[in-house]
Image 1 (spheres, rainbow, N blue to C red):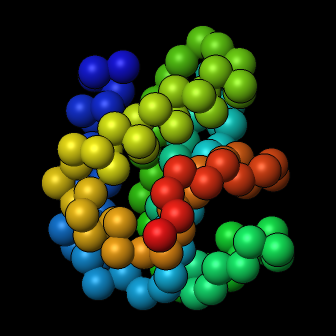
Image 2 (image 1 turned 90 degrees about the horizontal axis):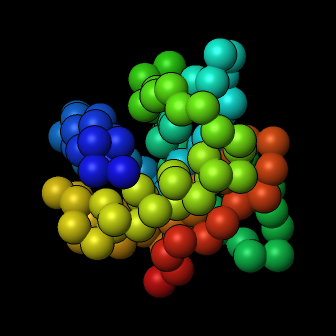
Length: 122
């Protein structure tokens, strides 16, 4: 996980270096299953958060668009979700912009066609 975390943190630092004034109240890390055992993470922010409305994650105020963190790993989506959660949690603990990210009301992660795991709630 160390190499994966290092590469993810480098990607996220670059995105946040360029866009640290990301508007919104929530941060969502969207996961994608690509082809040939490739996986991707996209950074988005949302303009509102409502724990009773799961569509809050779709109301994007910012998106990294096609600028995705992508890696190859021969495993299933459940393990990819667990690994991705661990990587984001580690970043929230020790990443360059961990303090700034925790200024948002909520931080979640999940596959775009699935449920969202809340990793941080202010």
